[in-house]
Image (cartoon, rainbow, N blue to C red; front, side, top):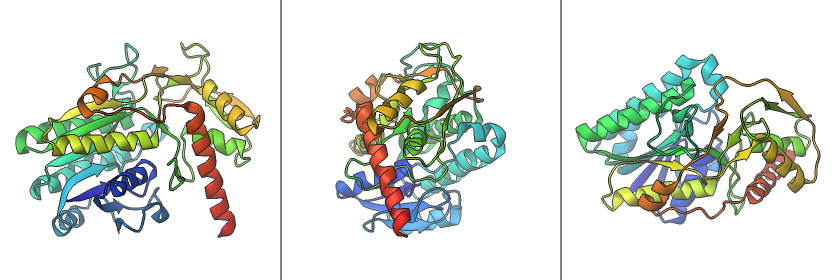
Length: 330
């Protein structure tokens, strides 16, 4: 049974491809390489360069490769960018997902795993936030993802497609074996940015707001290691294959770290005291959001194995050094 991974040349998608291949699965990757990189796709997986919203391409791909499950990562993900370009986000994240789902229904694909986000909650009333929390996204990015969750729910009722929507919190780290990591040159992920500052790739880094109602004034986030997240997707796929019901689950560790705590951890692990500049708040950033993860544990049988911020930072540092070595050798 072939699994289609959209965005499989990107950060999280490439870790999912490794997880699937390690489990003996047949994998096809669909990626337009706008942010992903060809080198992140192992030779054991077939790479098709194209857009997931291209219905003729997707229709042919699902049919000719015998795809039985789709794991959908491809999306625009930068919150401030979504505020500046909402129509671009609704086109790519929502309208193109509708096209992908239409092809899945037409070709009889029954299992769909969706890369959603904690941004669907907006400013949660309680932390840790459960899946039953009111959904009040404060950015076009969060709204674009929530619309896909709604489509999945409706399509599931109408056509029998079963799905798991995984709401990620802040993804970080790299493959523990050093095979892949966060490779986007202009990534905005906090740990990657801090690691680049520690390695002298940036003259400094910014903290966006220290006047939030949190213990040290900076935003509080739940950081999930990327291989743990890929394992949650594998658990979701096994759940659906075993006849499990459609689900929406949080993916996080039920523990938060502030932006300033993360930066101090990067400084400690790297041994470098880099320059940090304080700037104003960014649009669309909630003060604090931490995942309740009981549903993923109970329904999917998932349990984290890399829940350690220092380990995550060490992985990110090692991967950034790998990228630097590749660049120097090219």
